[in-house]
Length: 484
Image (tube, rainbow, N blue to C red; front, side, top):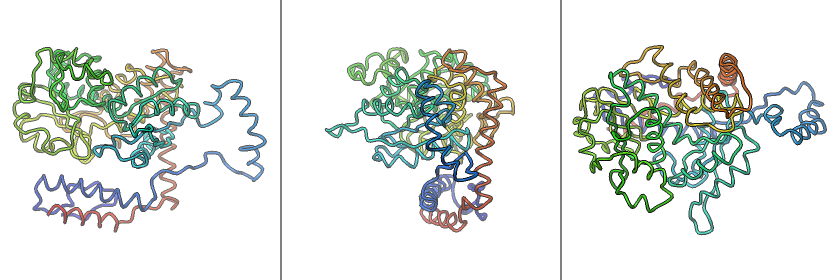
């Protein structure tokens, strides 16, 4: 057992030597939760507003505000698109949620989602050079029912202040209608990160996993456990990128999806699931046990584990099987357990295990790319281009069964992803402005480097206090005691 480092890089080594792998996995989860609670209290959140223009003298307030700023207002009045040039709108994203499906915790009330939404804004800034604002809204109607129309109306009202909208943690089926309506009716990109972001990064992981396993996407058998916003979008992108829908079986809480699921057909709110009922599982395989036998790929985004996915299911899969169990905060089966049952590649949604398949390497670059060309929407082609950009970046620097996609630590991946997305937006005809890939890459690199340098400078100069080591040790000691 080693002393824990302030940067938390040695988490696997700080637990007692007699701890089992399961105890270490549980201990890390408890430690990260306890430390998160303490750190958020210590810093009072993690986002602040900082000016990006100077104040050489107090008369500059007359430039930044009245009377000088009147000219900015009239310019925008006469040409609305100049708002992207004269204000921060062109680099500003609203992170919008009604907090009805926050991670694995369900409905946390509107303000309960603020920690996650601030986290999205934090990652946008540090990883993508994009400014974000957390906006948690109450979507309940007068009868206390969550109404998607309230979210739709809110976003349509505030869209004029932002360059893009990032939807987050909206429960299904409301999330489907909210995204589909807003994508068509807003004049800026509307991105549902739980669905599109997770699907994009999952596709990137599948692409490289299949390369390592020597298999082709159109030939493999795929099981999707869970049929929420993430997995239904993953299925759509997989099929668009070449997967055979006849070789896909998806499960929700009532069983497998197929054309006889009249309960799904009858509920028009679940139209995305019904589309998959019609296109996948033509053999109407009824159970996970049957579907998993000789399956090549499992993608699970369902109930947090660790025993949701059973060991015998993994053992029955085909040779060189690929297992993605990405529920948060605890995967449906721990990686060590899946490996013990013969899985060739295992991925989770957590950064403290190998192969983190998490939208954190997707949305910062995707949104940056869309913003740079002032896109009017983010198309499925842009999401698929981002997935291939991530996969290609990882392949060029080298991939292995324990390292299939880039990590957040690889700063170079984000400008590449942003540039590729920007080029796809131009190709799809949804960009307001055009630029070369080199120009896009240089701008994204400059903005991302600025954001990282700003955070480092604020920390080095004491404006952001470093985390107290005692706070970290206390959280670790508490977690160890809970697991003993």
